[in-house]
Image (cartoon, rainbow, N blue to C red; front, top):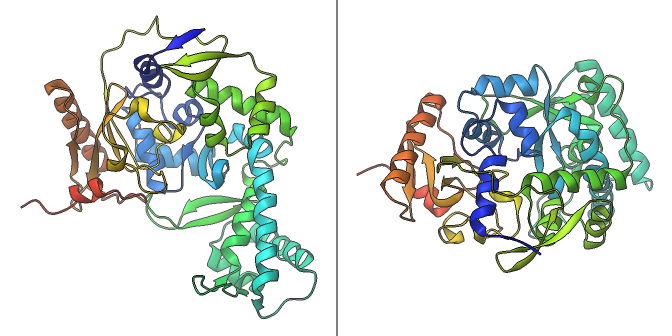
Length: 395
């Protein structure tokens, strides 16, 4: 049985995930990472900048909103990702279509259970389908619109779902219905309403990305294709890692792997899997590299088991839900964190001593990022205690 050390896995990660900043630009970064976490809009840009030394904020935006070669899409673990547009049909068939059904059923069940203001008729499913059709018609006419603008065009979106318990709040139909529609491939998240860091966006017709309609693929074949891509970019790994990343059941994971040339491997004492053609690390002879990755970056969020690339306590960089904040890396290992202060200054803190070279390289990475941000203050969606401490005024 082939054995991979933690060091070998880190070498593969550095190369495959472009932690040396050697990527050609946003399209290659998104493709080689399968997708970039997009729950926090700023993280998409920062993930690209970390992996492409010459990329700019404007180039990332152009790929998303001008060329439309990249698109934000809800997929694995009900998480928003930025995918290459050409890969979305695989993602849709492998993950998002099933997710859309779940979201729609949960919305319908919540409406039945809690009730609405004004009250609806008996056939809630038919009513929701009708509202969805009017949303698509309005978007086709308007070209793009915010949720509030769609609510003005389709008044049913402003229907209030009553709270089901003391801990719940009343909610307009707008957000849950548009989210379910987007997961089904009916509408697409478009450009932000403000700066590139804004968490508010416009909705656009799906035909702007696929004028002839999105190709429909077989679900089982798409799942196998996605599993192969993940093993190519994140393997060798454990089956637990693949199941966690995809959000699939164990049965689905096993079925997806049956058509792939997968072999059992030893991951520094733990059972793992890899593609039989896994080249390994014999040809890798790279100098250590410094990298500043943003919160929810796809590299540290790519595995369930993360101890092999953590040089510090997980409590320093992960929140209670397992989401990661900004991280400072040296040679494929997390050794600290970073943050952007209100004046646009990029600050770092290192909790693991990896020598003067590491500290100096991360200082240089921070200075380079600060120059590229050009004074923009970035507040991550996932804020750890360590990151917060870096944003405090220096005394």
